[in-house]
Image (cartoon, rainbow, N blue to C red; front, side, top):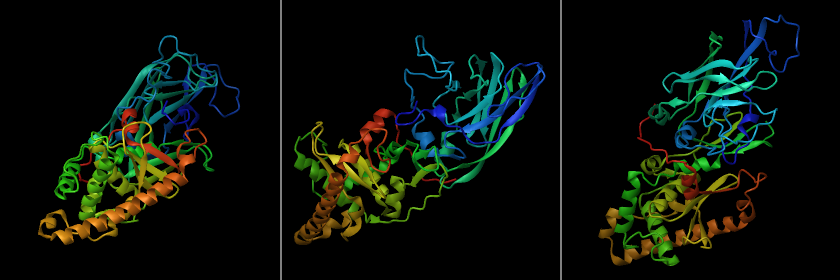
Length: 432
């Protein structure tokens, strides 16, 4: 199942159930209801839509995890179990199909070895996606969860920049007999909405951590990154970007400063405008994409950290998004060894200086040019001091990888997220 996530099987969407009587099938009644006297020829079969994020769907999560197989060799789906796999517990809800999917159907009252076909579709976003097979194992109440392999239209998902209602259709057939179609109205969230964690209770004591999804907004492959690096070289602070090849921490620090100075010359200012529409069971954060921040010359704490991390990742400097309560800042390593020093950087200070653009540097006198560099470096030094202070303050919590770790205090490694399979979200600047 998904890493850092509680078992998917423990979550049940509180949706209305569709009941359907099928003559000739013997089996238990609808779960959560007391048994009643029924004819041996009639069984109460029910179907309920299921969604990992309830009534909201998050394009950023769907797109960035499209190629991730959360289970690897440990497949829990009954129709995909490897030989020698551990036997499931009786209380476990049997699942079938694609365990990496976000949508499913819960069935109850299934007869033994039922032939089941489930199709889920969303107009404009999800092509009809079908699972068809034999349900060989159920709970004592005839329960099973079916995940069709989702055929998402990823281009459509990448164009969602404002949330909108969508119609989700769930269709199920059991032993050739169709159940009533269930049409649900969900909300397709903006591509800019990043899931932080999913709550399984209203008190927030039971949750799944999704903070690593923020790494999807770091895009080292964006064309704008090369432009920023080109401008940074024009400043003359460094002659090239070689990452850790020099094995000199001072050279690494100067490369980071060169990027910092180039972004300052772009006029990037701190902006705390970040309105995120609430969801009952999903905590999320609105994040600007790199090109949005550059175009608007505005960035909040997350945006600025994503922007810096994108450029540093491009030149091979290991970067981190550091989440602390109500805030985000950047961290990076001065070397590629495990014991290399980690530096914090408060990116909200990018807009503290008014310095000329890269194109205007050539028109400055040496004195004026040196004054601007000193001014920029002084702010950079202060930003490092503030970032390092927060790294020290939250050191214990940031190193805590237990199940009881505070979800609001996270160290998100960009290389680790890439190894996990979290891809950068490629944006095209258009909206839908």
